[in-house]
Image 1 (cartoon, rainbow, N blue to C red):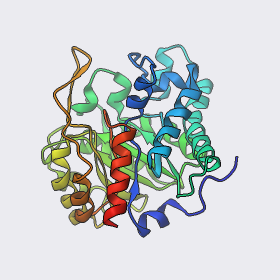
Image 2 (spheres, helix red, strand yellow):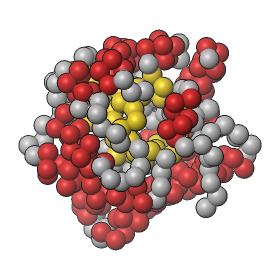
Image 3 (cartoon, helix red, strand yellow):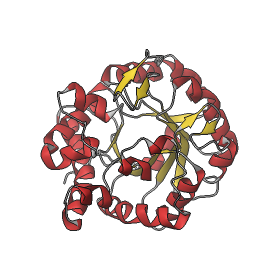
Image 4 (cartoon, rainbow, N blue to C red):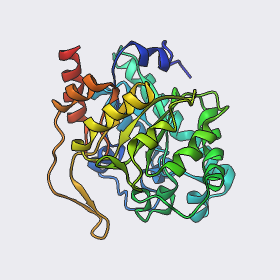
Length: 309
């Protein structure tokens, strides 16, 4: 495979602000793909892998530097529920990284010359349960049990050589501690981002306590928040930067609210590109969007950051 970038991710992060992509499910849904399955976008790894590559390309063409892979809901246990054996599940988990790497190489062929990177998504345990518990945390499992769940798929992802692991949408400190343990020795840098409500994790822990777990973890190159309301971001950025001294990663939702019973988004978007100036000034160095944030918004973010650079 042709190399997709010439500069290590950590060097690029130290040099300036990188633009993340938006919601992968948002782009796949807009392209007409049904994501109602428990595997969410991970289902397409087996059924329509080319659709995932096209979605990544759309974000690279919109101005993103970093594509987050379709492995958020991909796990050995989740695939087993669908009758997919472990060897095949490992192939699909690895494929998520390969598809994003392919998209980065193709973007280069299409004339995109900026630095492009791939972040391998590691979603929370609750994502596998597909019952909304990733927004509550406190699954009743020990830190050791959570580490045992995460480590095998993280090993598969790391073996395909993504630029960084995205330990994302983490609802509580117990799972964060498990992921920090699981990340040791993999040889791939990682960021840790919590899902929050106000100034606390979804499980209710103060953000100072949550971010402090990552302060001394050498594997963690950035900390922050994702899959939260845009209004909650700025305070979290300030806290993360102050507590850890590390670069901050932020990629909130549009501001709409997910109705789990109706399986639909409600409310209105409160996400604006202008908000990113304040986030960057407070310490954010990785900025993008999560659910309901599409390529148009990523283009606006990229332009805003260019203008204020």
